[in-house]
Image 1 (cartoon, rainbow, N blue to C red):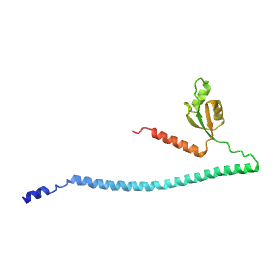
Image 2 (image 1 turned 90 degrees about the vertical axis):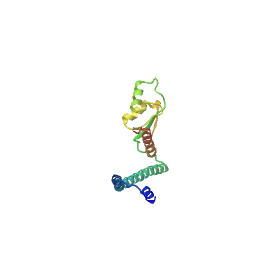
Image 3 (image 1 turned 60 degrees about the vertical axis):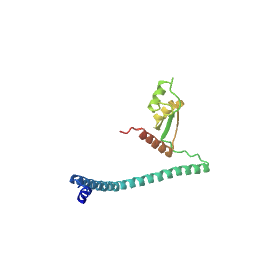
Image 4 (image 1 turned 30 degrees about the vertical axis):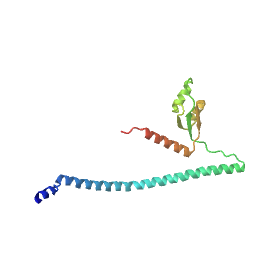
Length: 168
């Protein structure tokens, strides 16, 4: 009777192929972990450099912005009129519909990528683009963004586009 119970209790041997599969998967897991760790270490150095560069640019722009404010205050105090540098970028937004407008205005709005009400675009200011803005001025609102608002709006637009993208 005891011999029968011992036969039932005996665990069947694990097949060699299964043992080999387990051993290979364990080795593969260790190998992948090491590769991942090495890749992370390689990616850290450029990331640090990029961070330092961004920090430097942030500091530089902040100093420039503060310097402009300080100079304007000093000029006001002295009674001079300080002429700030001409802006190079503007933000334009369509605020009126284009029903029954001239073809020239319609074409300029298309060139500025303002095809719908409340669409907005950044426009680089040149003589031609200023003339275009003057042509469509009754239909748009435009102004000069500062660096902070330009950066935040461009990154939020990029995030919105990435959220809308369909993933496979």
